[in-house]
Length: 328
Ligand code: PLP
Image (cartoon, rainbow, N blue to C red):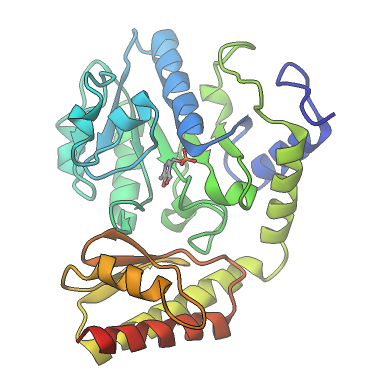
């Protein structure tokens, strides 16, 4: 049976949930079909927790330039330029703070605040990491105010940053986490995880026809087992360091501005708005093209498959270097 609906448990979903909880600080898992839907689940769970435990508090502090998805609530949570008016009115209750500025968060905390939600590395914004100090200060601040800390690890989780989850780099324990993208290795699978003390959904509070179906969760089990193979995550870190070294060399050779990121989520700062031009030229290369991604005009983002080889990284760098020479 491909899809028994979430009304019934199924073996692969139980196995994947067990693997996720055994290897994280979380106790409960709810599967979804996309990152945005997992984030909607996290927002709903936080609001329900606020109704039960914090006098109906519902505001979730999020960050300028953040990206949490394309549903109305997750667009409202996102701090992407222009999204506040695009499908107005927005879903209320998402005041925006500045990443890596703890005072900007503290200023927004009030009686209606139920949670703070952030990406450990802002992906769509151009690979901007939250600092270790900021993540730790945020955990301390939210604990002090009895506010939930939600990490959106749709882009940073599942080994992308060299640890299973990026918040582990800061040695903190969030209350909720969302996963997407890599968890399905390319098929539509996402998840929302929480600790026991936050798990206040009753059956039927959240759901969907395809949620946790055994076909997708079986893929998730295969992905998870691969990530947990001894040596796999250290190899991601090592290849991330190699990509970083190669990008830094490109910077030197071509007078570019710099590079940043964690693990195999990295960005090259071009110093001038040639991202789109590079993308087009790279795609059209003969005998085969290179797919680049430029989330900002002056920046390229690199998110290669976690099993990318050194030779493939080198080949990409060589192709990119040739293109940069041509653009001069
Ligand atoms: N959250 C983050 C941090 C993302 O990067 C994305 C997608 O880019 C999403 C949420 C939305 O995920 P999906 O496109 O699967 O809805």
